[in-house]
Image (cartoon, rainbow, N blue to C red; front, side, top):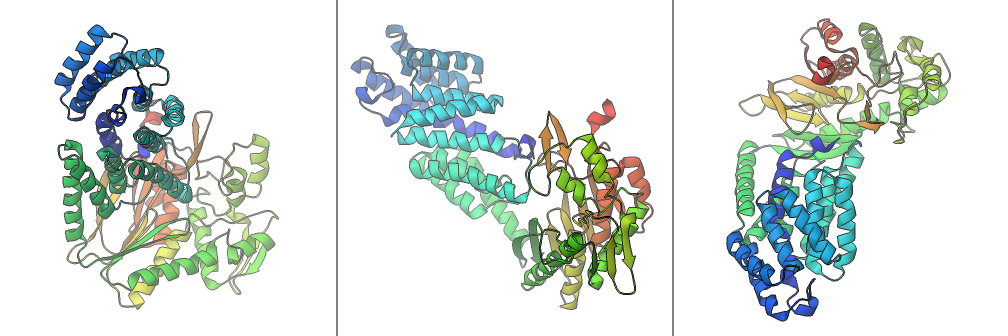
Length: 541
């Protein structure tokens, strides 16, 4: 996950919201000896008046006062800083930057200027410089509550914009880290409407997580408006949050929702039947206990360890079907890639680029032709010691199929199951199909919608989970024939099929094969549609 993964709307509003935040630092210290600048006492009341005008957006009046101060005291850091803030609001960033630097030359420990400059670096995308300046401001803020609160806000912003390439657990941890900064800011300086604004935006968009928390967002945004009724940005967001709540309530009337972290991703269940969630989660847990290669009690773990095992009919079925997809895709889909996943560090979370000799050696363990199946007694044998099966390319799809079967047996005719991008639409919503949003390959942009009943959708892409080395991205989906992460010129594949196992396997295979061969593969299967998005940068080179 990279910077584009962060909500574009979130970043836009954060840029707008910060415009008001920095004027409060000078307001918090009212006596001359507490000010960042200890100039003549007669200017203290004028500075206070200018800061009040800045807070209420009366920039022209504030500028007139600040200019008068600067005529008599051209090196007054507070006045220079206030004037620079006005220029920054007007979009004159270069001029504002020069003035902030001038303030810091006059008084290196001028906290407002330091924070303003850090924010400028953040808006430029220079996160390293922004973080360094923010850390300096944090140390300098000392007992200044509002100053420290604003540094927490900046830390939240910077962490929102940092490049990201982790899995679901890392995504949760990053989101909680961002949330903690905004929470600290709001608790430390609850009188500042901006701290509630940022926390409200976080709850509204929930970066790195599925969806948001409308109730919490409305509470925080309402608090911001109560403190500052003239706060136009907070008012606009609050109105939008209420509209979103009304839309969600109408859309989800008579629908129950539940979400759990299972099989390494979020599994969400939406159904008019309350019992649907329990049925789905129990079935997902059962399949995970069968097919996970990391669960020491699973059959796949035991097979990888011993190389020979009599397995359950279900495990045998999934392995056999996987071999069929391997054959149909001419090796592009392969469940024997466990050693490659470990070699590149995806399974252990310690990513690295191995040498060619290591890859060549590991490739000797790859190939589903090395899996021997005995249909009579469901025995599976791995021909070469060191082989490891990884069913990550079909496990969620098969779990969807099993869950849908259990739902039908329970008499449930309407349910949507979303397992981290693999979606099963059982029946439809009341009086209409399920509508599935197809996410664009980059950013939080919707590329289109699908209206489906009794279909499964699976998406594979290299943009969700990857690592970067020497400015090159390495996705987690491997080409089993080369031993390297897939590099077919495709960045996203969405497959619609009758069942989850087929959709899951074909999405992975097509991602590896590329557009032309992938489309040819999809035509081999009945009732299958594939949507392939290519990397235009590859095409143009």
